[in-house]
Image 1 (cartoon, rainbow, N blue to C red):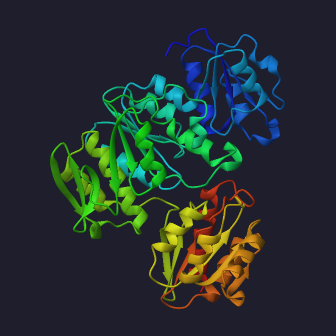
Image 2 (cartoon, rainbow, N blue to C red; image 1 turned 60 degrees about the horizontal axis):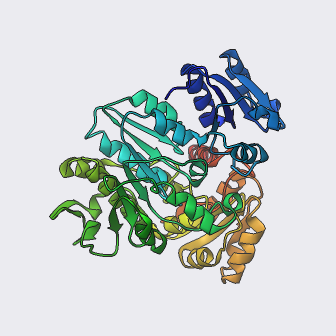
Image 3 (spheres, rainbow, N blue to C red; image 1 turned 120 degrees about the vertical axis):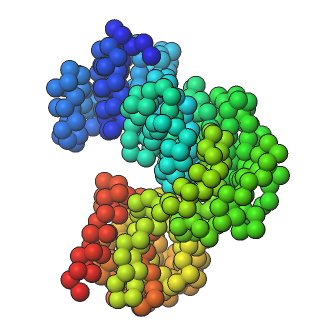
Length: 457
């Protein structure tokens, strides 16, 4: 990508903006970074970039920032509807996301995963699977590592696995992963995108520029993703947990099976998976299909699937104490994800839920809470609405406890309500921003409290 002597504007800081600014500077551009937050809200990032010769403008984003700019790179946290970017589009300027910037500098094929839930688990797993087929593999994107940095690091002769969010697809036009997957689509991020239909459109941009030489892996069991095959220019491979497919990845006689190009290959018994829950069977099927289509050998796929224990913050075992197991599922930031976690347990559950409310419908979630949970501990901004919905679902009022904005109090209440043989599960069904910087901080705080509690008992 030739940015030498170009004037590049990066909109939005954070890890993606920092990476894009540094790489553009490395490629010879004059770089300006603009963030709508004031400098005192951005920590050391502005100072760090300025020390590297990059101009940083904090606060109100005047339209004059666009004057003389040749290229604009947008961080995923920044919606394209802001006036600065709308003016850039009006002027016909070159605007792209950090993900598309990464694609333009990539010299190895990209395997990209999106979906409302399951992205991180599937991306992590695909990364491990591809290590069996390529000498160097990068894993980045929405998973916490800037995709542009990984594409540059990998160079040629390897592959890059990318977790892609709907936010990252807003400012893309020609992003083309060689193998793409859409795991599912359920209501989420409507505040950002306006409607569920627009949210789905952002997901579909992932594969819109593929050709028949590229592959698209779709969840046959999810009606929205199944229908995407009608709009897919690439070669579609379905996966299904419930159906025996004529072609694709599915479960047959209790075994993960791949059927493609006239071959049927039993890969691994479902019971050999170490990750809990039916949703993780789906994640394993999607990852298996992607890896197979990208050139991984079935026996090596089986070995990786058998050894994989999951990712931090997704139904993560913490410890057992007094006959009660404790589980961190802080990554469940919506009801659909929390439902999948609840369905993964056969033992009675004491559930810690709540946080920054996304205002999604709670009917199905609370119906399952009533069936699966011994007690419900609620916290954060969502507590009052969640309690009302639980009572409406006939969950016993005397089994609902409120922890306010204290994780420590929540763990204490859960511990008191639990009985030997129970599982205490943090699966909030909410974002974390009313109390934490992100779900990672929330999950680690929960684990720290649980471990301290166990050590002090």
